[in-house]
Image 1: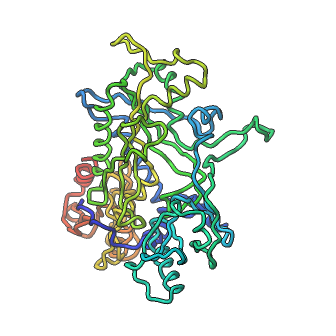
Image 2: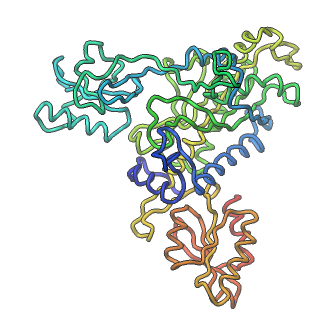
Image 3: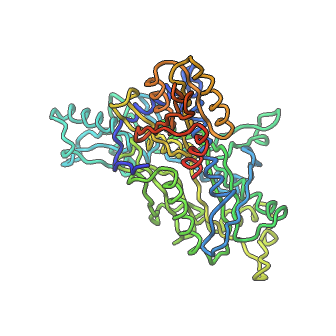
Length: 514
C-alpha cells in the first residue's frame, strides 16, 4: 500500500455516489425519502465495516500486544444493553449536562449547532456590514456565503477581503446583521440555547416520567456499571481492560457529511483500568498504539495525525493535566483540516466514583489491590473509536480515481479490510472453464470472501472488482485446462503472473493473513 496524498484528490459527492451504486452505504428508509442522520450499510459496506470491527477486536482483545511492562495485555469483552436504568445517565452527567448550543432560523426553520456555525465578514468591517453564515468545514457553503456577501456589497468576491468569525463570538446586537446559511433575509437566527442530545423513550405499557428511559449516548457506561461483575466473574486484575463494540445514539442538531456525524453510530471502546499513579505510563502507550493501529490497516499517509487536546478542550471526566488526544483524519469535507476518528483519554476515576456515590455503595466499591494490600478507585485510559467514522476514513483513503481503468476508479483497500478478497473468473463461459473456476471458488470461500463472476467481458469484470476493492483476481483460461495454472491480477499495480492453481489459497494467505 502506498502513502496517501497530503489532501484528498476527489470530490466527496463522487465517493457518495459510488457507495450508493455499489452497495457500500444507502440512505436509511430511502424509498420513503430517507431520514436525516441515519444510514444503512449495503452488502459491500457491511462486509467492510465488519472486517474493520473484526480487525479491531482481534488486535485489541483476542490477541493484544504486550504492554509497557512487557506483559501481554489483559482485555475481556462485554456486550451491554442499549437501554439501561436511567439513573446510570444521571450519575454519568449526561442527563444534566449532555447539551449542545443550538441556533434556529426563523425563516428556513433549519437548526444549527452554534459551535459549528461560522460567519463571513468584511476584513475591514466597520460595524455596519452584513454577515453571512455557513457551517464549519462546508467549503461549498463558505463559497456560497462569499458570493452572497459580495453581491450585497456590489463587488467581486475575493477571499482576501473577508474574515471568518465563530458565531458564538458575536455580540447579541450583531444577530440582526447575520444572514443564515439557508435564509434570504438577515436577522432570522436566534440566540444560542442549549439542546439535550439524549434520545428519550419509555419502557413499559404506560408513558410517564416513571417509565422514561434513554438510548445510550455512549457504550462506556455499560462497562463502568459492570466493573464489579467482571471482577467477580473472571480472574482479571488491575491493570486490565474491558472492551465493547456497540451502537450509540445522539440527537445531533445538524447531522452532516455523509456518515461522519450521524444520530445512530457504532463505537469500538476500551476502558483500561490502571493504578492511579500509572497514567503517565499507560496513556502514551495507548495513544501511540492506537495511532499505529490505524496506520497498520491502511491510513498510512499525511491524512492521519495525532493531536493532543488543549486544556480548554478537556471533558468533564478528564483529570486536570492528564493526557487526552484525538487521532484525526483529513476527510474531503474537512480539508485542509481534520476530523476526529478516535479519542484517547485519561478519564481518571470519575465514572467509578460517580456510580459508587449514586448507588450508595461508596467505599465498598473500591477495588482491592492484593499486591499492595490497599483499596482505591482505578483510573481509566479510554481509547474510543468510531466504527462508522473509521469505515468512512477507510473508504476515503481507498478511493482512487484512475482514468486509465474501465471503471474510472479503484478502491485500494488494505487486503485485510477488503470486503471481497478475490474475483474468480472463467475467461469464457464455456469449454469447461466455468466448472474449474467454480470449483476453485468453492475451495477459497471456506476462508475468504470471493466472488465468482462468469458474465460479460473480462475487462468489465475487472472493473467491477476494482470498484469493490478486491485485491486479486484469478482467471481460468484454456491454458489452465492444459497446465493447471491461472492468471492472477494484482489490483494496485495491475501486474499479472501465472501461478499453479493449487497455490492460489497459499498465495492469498501470504498476502492477506500476513
